[in-house]
Image (tube, rainbow, N blue to C red; front, side, top):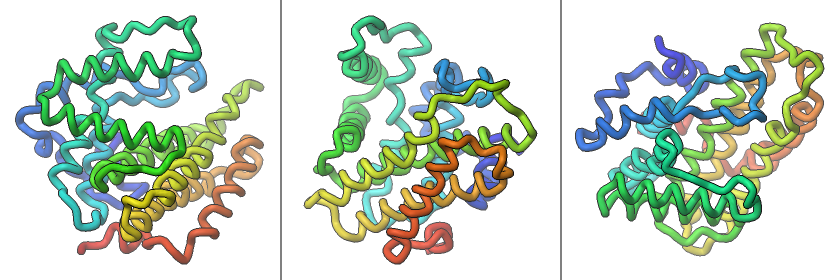
Length: 276
């Protein structure tokens, strides 16, 4: 069983699948190249090498999750195709295509986004590029915490992408801590612990404030966000209390409050992973 298969099994009870057989024929070469784009390589993710991950592994987890979890009635082809191409722009990082002036901090993120879009436009068909732009529109709405105003397929695609990242990080991080490892007095940046709930609240605010999203999709997206929070809480439940960093302990309390606040509204884990 691969690392990804083990993670999906432990987190969601998903039986191992052959990911390669799911890759669309016209994207086989592009997807296979995603191995070279590493994730979690920022200096903030210490110790170095704690999480060995790349775009290919992220996409594998995301696609398999999308095939196993309940999806409300919508254009499934548009949803899955969007997921397949959503990170193509990051391929430029491996080829030094994205050249951002590091000293220009106020505009750095804007420049990165523009550069990634240039890369993606050169690698995707016109149809796939249009899907990517709508996906990015949702990302921008979430980041700015403004109401989303695009089709539900792109909203759900972005929420699935959003929940996959933090729970993946904490899956490996908590395993590392449970082995008795410490940072020799060095604490990871507090943002690593507080980012997830902060962003979750922004995503939910953006979705809940939208007039273009039905109540059914709002409840579904909220259920996905709570699935992520619940999963993170479960992971930290396995860590001895005296090994939990203080910033994370405070954050776990806030996460529990978020779940309790929305508990009566969301779809259950059992429903999300049952056969419909």
